[in-house]
Length: 234
Ligand code: C5P
Figure 1: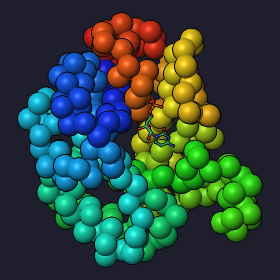
Figure 2 (figure 1 turned 60 degrees about the vertical axis):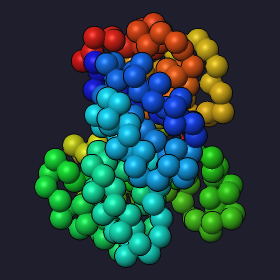
Figure 3 (figure 1 turned 120 degrees about the horizontal axis):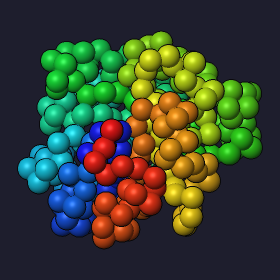
Figure 4 (figure 1 turned 45 degrees about the vertical axis):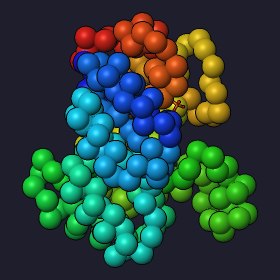
């Protein structure tokens, strides 16, 4: 098992998700679920997947609301033993602090890791500046929000493989979670800022979120090896 690998369960079909958990649980450290699985099933999906062998669940619902509402969301996630969750850094300092304070109410083993999302990869600089009225460049905005997030007590931030080297000195020992991982050959799908697993780990990613490069393959061992990862693990 390589505990640094988080397998993304990007499906709305619970049976398919359970099947993926059975297949990949011996090889990866955690499973990421989003709106696709949570909307139809509620947070009981966390309990169900755990019963099927998913020891750690990363709840990627990207919370963004008033502080009280986000604190309530963190509370429910903690009650279900969620291991890691995401929230939007653009929700502001009061929202971030409310989430941090709520998570701190739980014993360490039950307190979810809180990871901030700075700028969605689907947004480009023209949209950031023209639509959202931000005066910084996109990398500047990512660095700014990430720094503020960890200063406010978050456990880490999400970033693409391309931003790891810039963000590591900014976030210090906090966690960097990197999606958009692809092999040296193969489809990049809808991802733009992709990187390979070995380089991302060498550039100090703590966790790699990998979806289709794993879940589209029937053999987990071969899928990990194709990404240059050791199925027996690190
Ligand atoms: O299939 P693939 O490896 O591209 O899936 C990546 C996963 O990481 C998806 O669940 C996607 O929603 C998520 N993600 C991402 N880019 C971000 C944040 C999350 O691709 N910036």
